[in-house]
Image (cartoon, rainbow, N blue to C red):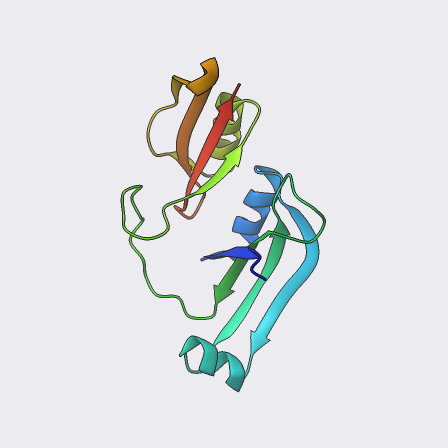
Length: 148
């Protein structure tokens, strides 16, 4: 059996980023918080004296347990340049929303920013699609989309 379980974001400010995903993008707490350390974690991560804290958030539109967005922070973080949408590797998280424009306002009010512009285009089956890439408060890229 194979089943998708979660995506992990390593946060500079785990509480602030968790609050952003809860309040702006409607992720829900499932009361799965973590405060992890020990030799097993050092072995797993390859980091001496690793210490992780954070929480799993239920992604909107799914069941009561999974999939989740796992927002963690380490005691020691490596600096990272803000990623671009065309950077190799994971590029973005995507959320379907009812109103892209109003969601962009919520993102910006909560400390996020825009990557590009809001675009509207016709999709197959004569559906109008609205898309935008935004950044969460720590620079991670999120796609907001509405297809009607």
